[in-house]
Image 1 (cartoon, rainbow, N blue to C red):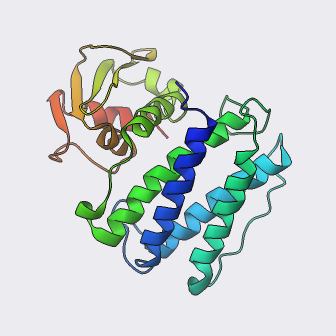
Image 2: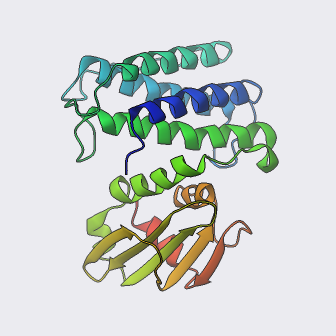
Length: 245
């Protein structure tokens, strides 16, 4: 269920500003959740993502070939450059009708995909920046409602159905402990389905806050971490990750 363009825009604005403020004090610090990146790499990445989708959205492009690659600024200019890309993106998306046809890499070829994707991308990377700047205690969880929507988005757009169908048959139940959110995912043996539900049982179950469930799907938290309560087959979450982008 979409949270709507206004909510996505507000999340992108808030998380984008917080990300850049955190990263500005950690430009040379490692980003533990993104191996081989430091804070500068994270700022360069998110600025490039914001720039790419701002270009697509502003032009109403039905193809991506017209987006010119950016040149990475000098280290002392990175945050200011990335902030310009964020502000550009926010201006474009503020006036955008979610139903407007536009190119995306997904099967949802409309502006609403970009609005949602930018809120989700920025939210997860804001958490990365917090982690780099202040460690785990300084990493504010992703908003529960946004995180639940993020789990939906991950299952809709970041799983690979053909790969998932070819895996060994199994099912995984995800249960958010701090808000209304449960999912039952079945994959393997020629099947890939998922549904939101009131309650269900799978071969494996993972209970955690909505933020931690989303971070686990994005490879930020792994089985064995105290934040994840796992029942049944402990390999179920890793198996789902293996059939995702």
